Length: 215
Ligand SMILES: [Zn+2]
Image (cartoon, rainbow, N blue to C red; front, side, top):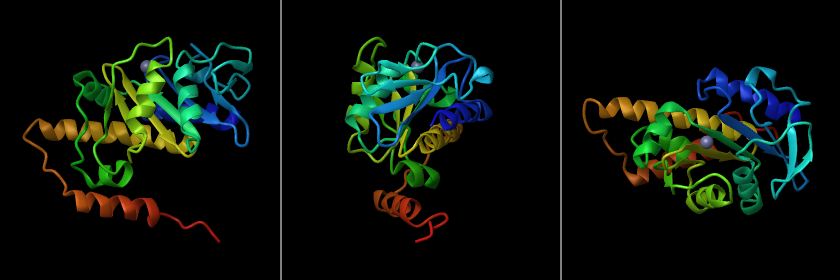
């Protein structure tokens, strides 16, 4: 999991989701009440499997030579309260954060959004770093929602997935659709997709699309 989480940070850079060190990936250790997360303040080029930090589900450092990411409490809260989540990603990616700055959900006006998010990408509450309030806002917004992404108001994006790679994919797709819908808005009002069509697209993409795993 250290190797997986370390290498996935390169995807944040590759897709232009992060500036400086402001973005992080974590992954739950299968079968353990532990997760692996980025060390605080270390540049993406310097991340190695060895430099990753292991924390318990209360966000306490268990193993590692560095302090954990300053967003560790939010990741830990999600793992404690959403047992199906195996990966969490946080970024301040530009277009998605612009929607967050307005406190405006991204409306589901693209089939790719219906596929990946199953509807609008919701906005979570304004929350200050330092306690559980960011984690509470993420869980309260995403619990019972099909979207694996939440725009935390005035802040940025948190995404969840069954594993860290899925959470990174959701972060990449979130920024992609945030950009496209923003561009669409410049010349008019994007057209909504009917809820029953969103349901059909979501169901097909989640259950049928892609390579079937061998049985
Ligand atoms: Zn942040």
